Length: 202
Image 1 (cartoon, rainbow, N blue to C red):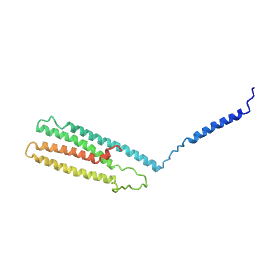
Image 2: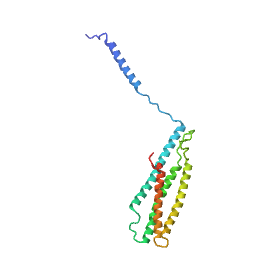
Image 3: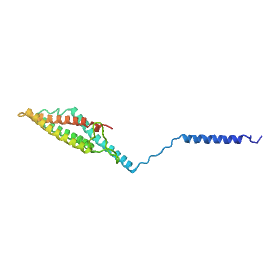
Image 4: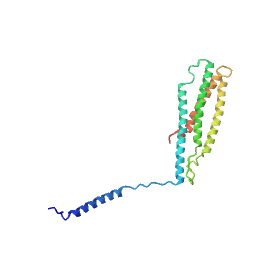
């Protein structure tokens, strides 16, 4: 009665073989993950792209902050408590300086973003589309500077024209200041529209 049945040893071997087969099948079905090794050029490219994205996000935040600040100020209206011509002049002069400060922060951020050339891989061919070759970063900055100069000249002339509508009266400098403020805010909206892609989270 204490003897092992003749087939028990063979059954044990079969059981072990089945277990090993299952283990082998499990390993065979587990995908092997290969870690891609970057070339030095690819590594530098990835680092440059990361730096570009971080800097672009920083500048975008600066531009958006300036836009939001000026929008809040405009909604609050300028100089509601100024009850004399002199008080209006002084108040509007102060309000214009604040608008100019917001615009300067916005324009600086946009111009710097335009100057940031997106990194390219060595040997990568230039990009062409159905409407031609995109502007380089230098060309985009030159275009921005030209628009700014032309807009500044127009706003100066328009503000003078506003002054001349009331020339000879005490309201002339007040209307000139109001025009200067309105024109600068309109230009801020124009630039936010034109360069809206730079302000988007892409």
